[in-house]
Image (cartoon, rainbow, N blue to C red):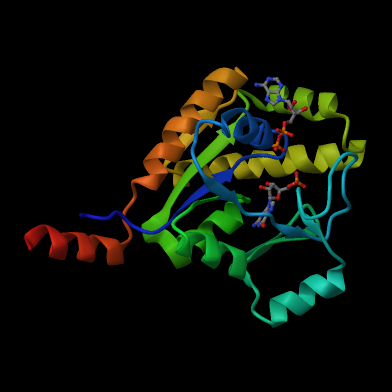
Length: 206
Ligand code: ADP
Ligand code: 5GP
């Protein structure tokens, strides 16, 4: 039987407050088995966030040790804190043939593309306007005024990278955005790695 590739990556980026978590949650029943990459960060947990579920919350020293040890697939400084993706669980999930979903910033997307382009699909998620983003950050009530100002400023830079992504999902209605996300996740699974492509051709010709 012809077999498809083992594992694929779906990178989601977009301003903080764009609705990435909301959309993943709304679509999770419909996208089949996946592994959500839990990032490590030096930022403080928000109210309601849990260690090892939302993030691995660590000190700056511990994060810098992991950098030295080469434990990150990618990492970046965002809003004055470190955020990074540990390599080991991602390798394991890919080896098990899973779709691995990353919620990372535009710098992280570039690094993942540089390392694993052939199995990567990406989507940029954004509210319809900057004004709507501001409204949502304020309604979420999880960030101080300073942090909100910093996130909005960062968003005006991040939006410039929208063209680097395979897909754009405008999160106006959650239901519609979740349906678009389901389509993107299904497409991501169909992406063949170079290795799988060579195997496929060899088997096909047999
Ligand atoms: P992110 O994970 O991208 O930082 P969240 O999923 O936490 O964003 O969403 C930010 C806030 O906006 C949350 O309070 C969420 O309930 C709200 N939100 C998400 N999508 C929508 C939408 N389509 N319309 C209105 N509010 C939304
Ligand atoms: P937040 O503080 O709102 O959870 O996340 C802030 C930003 O950091 C978001 O743009 C989010 O996508 C990004 N981010 C979260 N985890 C990672 C990661 O592991 N690597 C990178 N490069 N960015 C991340």
